[in-house]
Image (cartoon, rainbow, N blue to C red; front, top):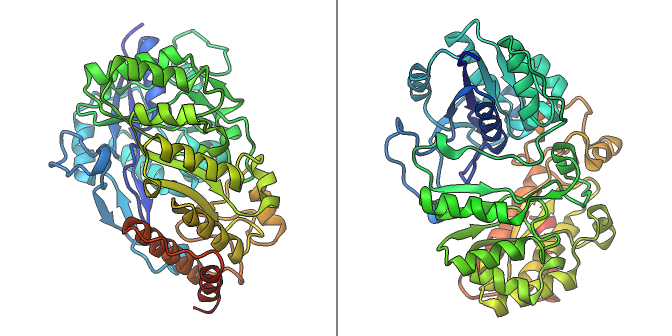
Amino acid sequence: MDQHNILLINPWIFDFAAYDFWIKPIGLLSIGHYLEQHGYRTHLIDCLDRFHPLIPKVKQKKFGTGKFIRTEVEKPAILKHVPRKYCRYGMPVPIFSAALDQVPRPTAILVTSGMTYWYQGPQFAIRLLREKFPKTPIVLGGIYATLCYEHAVRHSGADIVIKGPGEIAALNLIDDLTENHRTINAPSVPFPIPAYHYYRKLVSIPVITSMGCPYRCSFCASHLLSGTFRQRNPHDVIEEIEFYYRRRHVRHFAFYDDALLMNHEQHLSVILDAVIEKKLKVDFHTPNGMHAKQITPDLAERIYRANFRTIRLSYETANPLRRSDIGNKVDDEALANALDYLEHAGFQRKAIETYVIMGLPGQTIDEVVEGLLFVVSLGAKAKLTSFSPIPGTMDWDRAIRLGNMDPEIDPLLTNNSIFPLHRPEFPYEMFQKIRNLSKVLNYGLDHGINLFDRSRLAQIAANYIRKG
């Protein structure tokens, strides 16, 4: 087969805020790896690569994270009411153009997409790519393309939109374009194998030890994007970590699993035991919340000894009835026990962040405040996250039934930064007040002061939120 050049593009983020928490386009990198295995030459331009060789030196923040270069842009008309600056995050456009000049003329261009409300990034990239390569087929895949397929077909500007896992679909499509008579009929590749060789400087990488999630949380689209829950062979994970540690000198590894602790005796514990035994001096991070019920004293010890530096737990809500929507995967006692085990293992409580969700359909202000105060009462930080409605989830349908959201809503309006549901009893200003409360509570913990008194402060905080 003649060599064909396939260009991979990870586009910019358009949003009110964005930060590099170990972000990498895992799906796109896995597609690149798969295409290379089948004889194609691939090239990547990652607009979110802070260490791209054409970008001036960028300051590195804590644990390999950092700020993206940002360029303020005009806010879309439907977001004019939001009193915040709107920016394009990622490499400046002239650098993108220069990077395009450095790659051979592509046979096809594959563009990925992230959050549904980030669709302006792929849209903008496709427009620039069309100017540069007017006759080259442009294919769009990723999260937005999968969850908002019809919208992507109508508005992205791509010639072809791929829905769902992309490795085999991309290979079959490019084989067809290049008249290579080969068809792979398998539904998907079991696990993504990202190719990180595209990056000249590699400070951190995400690690995927499993796909999907056994739970069906009302707000989550994991089952739509990743299918049934399955776990990798832990020895393959160990080999991957050790390879990038020794060969590329990577020190920061972020677990992006939705259910990292499931079956941990045969899975995560095996990985951590190997890391400890091999004396790998790495830092682990859990940007996705771990399930508190599955943390045992022994597992907490392993997590500490393997050097987890960013610990996040899932709590979500203080409402027992709403917990049934998230599979009863956590309760107050389980969270308290998990924090006890982690502290006994050596972690500081104030360094452990616990997710509390705000804005779920039908959720009250009191429920959110109660969740924040309970987490802080345990000495852990409350990490407030606002609900973003995702097509195909139970809460998407629930928001429509309650009249909080138009079923034809523009994905830009589902941005969790703007609290999208139209609820007079829970306006944007209230969202800001609760966020300010969480900042004050966490600030107190940072300075050795727990501002929460279970009887009096709960009432004061609730009154503050209601009356302003």
